[in-house]
Structures are given as C-alpha cells and as structure tokens.
Length: 229
Image 1 (cartoon, rainbow, N blue to C red):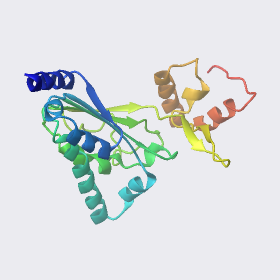
Image 2: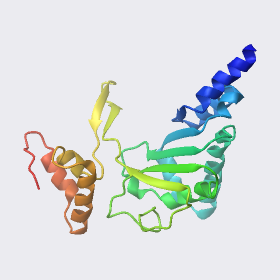
Image 3: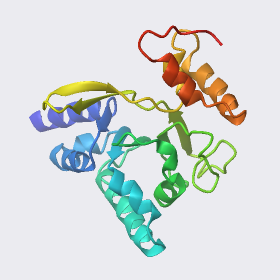
Image 4: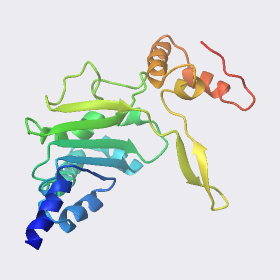
C-alpha cells in the first residue's frame, strides 16, 4: 500500500512539472537518481546550455573533425532523455558563454544532425536561439525565416541575449558588467520602443547602412540624453 501510494505521488508530480536543467551531466544524474515512475511520467523537459568558445570554434574545423563533434553532441543530449519515455515537449536553449556575438556561430552545422533525431517524433521540440545580426546572417549557416524548417514538430524561436553579466574584476570581486548585443537599440531606446519594435527598426536601419551600434553607444554614454527617433 505504501509503495503504491509512493508511486502514485511521483506519477502525479511527473506529469505536472517541467524538469529544467542547465547542464547535461546534471540532467543525466537526475534521470538516474529520480524514481523511474517519476521520469517515465515527465511530459515536459527544458534544457539550457551555454557552450564555451572552444566548442563553437570547433565548428570551423575540417569536416572529419566536425563530424566527430556532431556525433558527440547527438549522443550527449539524447542519452539523458532516454529515461523520459512519456516526453511530449522538449525545449532547448543555446547560447555562448563568452561575450562575442551569436551570429558568428554556424547554427546549421550545430543543430541539423541533432534535429534529425526528432524528425517525425511524437515530441514538440522548441529551440531558443539568440537573435541574428542582419549583417552577419546567412542562409548557409543560420536558420532564417525564409529557410526550410527542420521538421513539422520543431519550432525555432529567437530571443534577446543577456545584457548584464557577472564578471570578476581585478580585485577579485564580482561586478555587474553591461555587454550590449544585437539589437543594440533595445538598450538605447528603452521606454520608447518594445524590444520587438526596436529589433524591426534596427534590422531596417542596418539594411540602409546605419551603424546602430555606434548610435546606441553614444546614447548610452554617461550624461547623454536619449532622444526619440
């Protein structure tokens, strides 16, 4: 009776919560440590990864090295998922751990082999990626609105990158550092535009040859007064 009640409680929570992890090793450990009746009932799983610079630099290596890395990625992510047999929705958020822009990343090389594993699977897959700078986006490297979608059950959603980061200064103390990224106008015109409006305006401005990053930098200087467009 006690074991049956125990299993029923875990099943109840399993089908009602979203399991979120920011590390593959932790997710794998959770899958092994939590009761099977819980993991087998989990319907929603979210994974957020910030990869180091070296990982993305490897995408530019020779094809045979890239293929080996893709194989490892395809094994590292699905392996911890194998215990979640009732999974209905899987969310994956990717970003770089360093301050360099996301647009230099080859999204196609990174994600195409992984997304192929979910083709026609009975799982809703949502991939969250940082917004692309219009000057550096390419249909050969990125998933653009005009690109063919990987699969009917896969959605790719663009998001703002984190602007404020904690960094250790020369005194060894943690300090909040502002790291602007595209769209730069989100910070400069805060209060005048929504992030969506700012991104649409900025994309058009870059297309007209306007250096929005420089404009935003001048506007964000101490003592400067913001102005409306």
